[in-house]
Length: 143
Image (cartoon, rainbow, N blue to C red; front, side):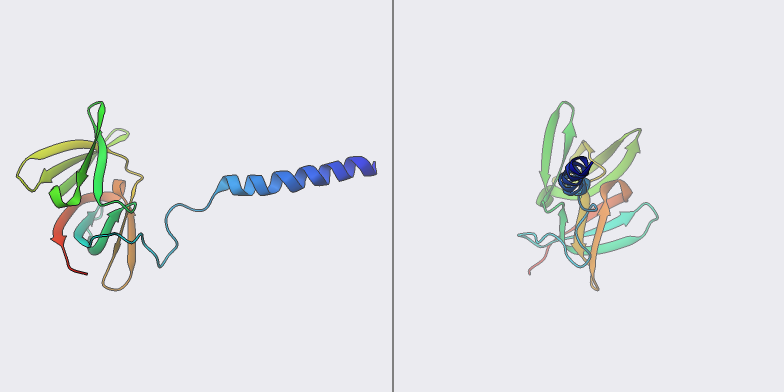
């Protein structure tokens, strides 16, 4: 009886930490921090409620581009080429209509779970792409 109890204790000892680690941490960054971009892009975001939020040091998951599916391929559009992005949910997909700086447009299916990060005048901000109506590029600002 004592031997089986010891075996169970060891089993629980090894299973508990691996189970706790498998759960992972909650999605997103800790409050009070954002990914630090190499360049300072300024975007104004409009969420699904129509609330406008101007952000500096804007990134999408730490990157300075919008990426997604274009047909069977993947496209990456750098922020400096983007003027406005309008989002539209179509079934399970999130479509982005991207107005480029040269006046052309591109249609891209994006992962709506990707998070946008930026710095507001009074704190840090994060939001998922699927919660946005529109992103407007205000350009790059000096640091």
